[in-house]
Image (cartoon, rainbow, N blue to C red; front, side, top):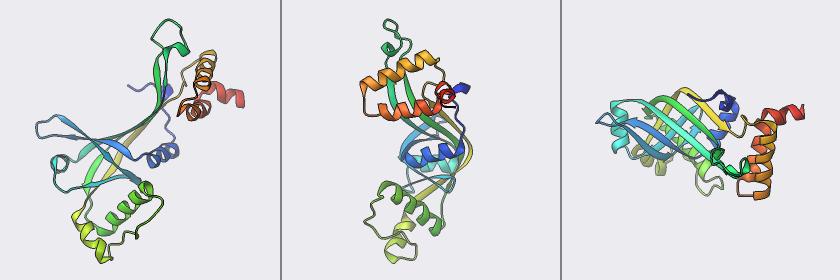
Length: 208
């Protein structure tokens, strides 16, 4: 069960995170009944998850047999070492992160216009600098490619998010962690500090 203090159910914020991220893990059920996980690129477009690839392969076989899927996206921002909070015990060691878990139904996209829209959304996300002609199903150079490419949409039935940035810390322990991050100055530490200040109830209360 997810701890309530780490649940951040702001839909807009969760959608912005999904638009930022480009890699997730698809959960399907294999022929033998065991869960199978497939890491893949995705795009969150018009309130749905889309991914693409070959029309054949194990994940496509799994989806034909059982359309219900799970999809997970996560980003680790900072490892919090135990000594930020305790000079002797390992127990306080943790990680700060964002994660989203989706349950939904996967469907093959057959409409060329919808395929083009989803793939165009992929390009905007993964190649924002341009350098290609817009994907248009009426363009003869794209038409055959669209027909050959498998595009899958996941209609979202349930979406839950979990963001952990010290919301459960008392004010003194919160300060210990922020001081440690400031001194360390790692790659994601400045962004982690901003997120801690945004989510922690102590900091919010100090601002109000």
